[in-house]
Image (cartoon, rainbow, N blue to C red; front, side, top):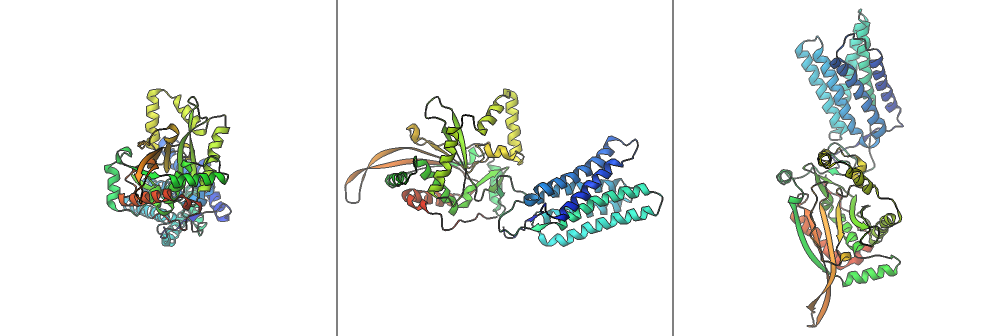
Length: 471
């Protein structure tokens, strides 16, 4: 991550507003003074709609989202390059010059994309030079035309120059993020950062095993709970009413992600992403503890630095919100609206949602309420009085881990001094997507999880160090 530089454009910059003014001016001039009588639909789309749409899209992304996602302006810049390339091919200039012009446009767009994406920041001088050459060429062409009789052609050339000049000032307004944080760039998703430094076999395996449920591995383990029970009683005496096994398991899982951050990755579109320090936890709860009460799902955003107390406060705040709210949650409302869709169309809608998710086209609010897009899903069988189940993963969404724990039970065992005692145990299971990390990494993480359960007092203090996932 240290090799990548992130750029932004502030709305307070006068250069950004000058760039927007020039771009909007080019759009207004292009629409107001289009005088090609008898122009067909294709000409209108290529000469008016394409460049106007590109200029407006550039302005919107620069001013509304330039603080965090300025790199996305590379897409309207590509549309601008396509427009100028079409103009060159359709112009009366010789074919070889038109092709050279198109190659120059392509090089200019690639330079812009590389610089805006932060991969090669040293190329920004070359990008400025290419933009300056384009502006100079267009202005010179208009100046030459003004000396002749075709003043209208001169105006058309100048409005193109306004558009390129707008991009040029936007580039001058770019500033580098110096806050030490990671900022999104090309290839990242709304809910995760793309992990790029992976060995080739990992990427190939994602295509060999395309489905999450078919690439899952299951693990069953148990833990002696005497220390956990003492810890829970101590927490309840401190005033954490309702503190129980769920909070201990969740706090322990949060802690392992501080040491083993790759376990917080997910796979979407055959590509591996990392949520970094955003731990998204889901769990089914009842609005009331009755058989008739409906189920709903809570979703929490936790941090690797959270202690058991932090987890308790966030978890119970979410539970209380569900219990105290007579209306359904946002997830319940979305599910109800989807349920109105007829069966055949519903099947198509689910396919469409999965396809949109594959290409990261789902709206951010759907990702936020979706229980299928998270770091881990917990289910407690203890409240049902049955052993832990091995729950399947979902092929929809991107959640890579499902954890279940069951009811406590006693089992006789012989102590070191030869005595027989009835030890109390609790079984738990993990079902995990094997494609995000290798088996050795998972084994180390789950062994650390078991050690934390045997000594839960370690969850009272924040971790000494939070390890960052690789780029």
